[in-house]
Image 1 (cartoon, one colour):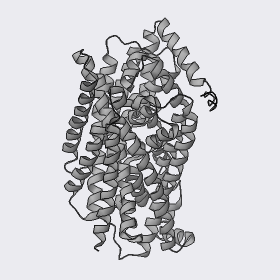
Image 2 (cartoon, helix red, strand yellow):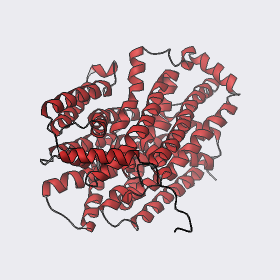
Image 3 (tube, helix red, strand yellow):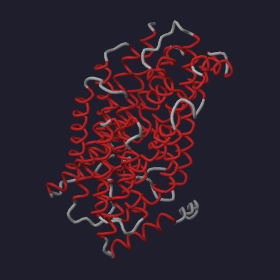
Image 4 (cartoon, rainbow, N blue to C red):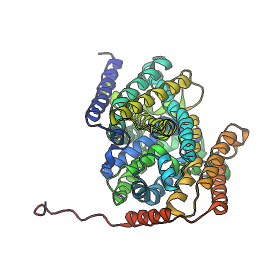
Length: 502
């Protein structure tokens, strides 16, 4: 049998599984709360794996190994910063956000939480947040579609456009019908697949390159600085790379998983599972890049057309075609898990945060779910149009969108949860300052010196605090909700009920 046939069979089985989960979730989705937040019933393990898989996207298996392949271990500062940021996010944001979103009028989206938390009767903050989500997520969704096109081009020799349309079509289909529940449970399956693939490829690769010592020797022959975390870049460049960790606090598709957990107490278990998964997968991505450098140095006849496809190429070289197909499916898993999560957040922004506010109509539960599905479709079509021709690297597109959310929403989320005196004008001014800074800085030559998330995040904090202090007025309702949210976030997990008591 032709090698490619084996791989196509593996891909078809994977995609059928994802569509099956989407159908299962479709049959359990009755209203908008189910469609957008799975009824706030996620087990901490499910929330952790879902958050990790929706976070990592194609950059973990393609973008990060590609950057490391070109620049060496210095590029690992991105992964280090992200791991620290993810831990802080689970530790400080997850429990309070889960508690506060329920206390504050059962908010089911990030913009509606800002609106309810700050008692914004004008709803300007909610609309502005929804617009920011749509603007930056269109680029983010587009990056996933680009990754899909690159994946099929590198793996099967198909055209970029065909690959982009296949990946986008399947993802949109199971997200359209399965909603948040479908996206979440496909994330779990995809997270496990990514984890296994990122362990097996570098382990087998080390044997193929003659062991750890021979691998390191080959890397040193390419460039002695490739094995140093500090050589190969400036201090500012290192800080800029590590600053990716700041972005976690403001990523709607990640923090919405915190809102969907069963209780604030589940955050502790979620943190342990999620960070454990993340450390191992990131180490696997780093090891894959290093093994790739060694392998292609030792085998000059084996060519690597695109550094971002080093994981794909190694999988096809090292494994039987069917196993390689399953490993390659892990790349699809990374791409599709993030895509589906982002589409759900975009849909919620369109329906919950824009349509409801602008129309001022209360549609039926079924009509709201239908509007949610239409939102998924609209955003998908716009993102497909942007991704029609590949015009940037995967990491470049992700970097811009990540900075946009991190600088716009990150400080607002933290201040909302930990500072009583944050006001609507302060939050709005800070959010706009962060978003505008990222757009301007990210499209100028300054982005070569410092990642745009750093100035955007800092400016947001300064503007939000200054404007809030100027406009602050005591509000008894906000004070009561703040105290209740803190109390719930710090409450111990309920003791398990004995069988005899049940």
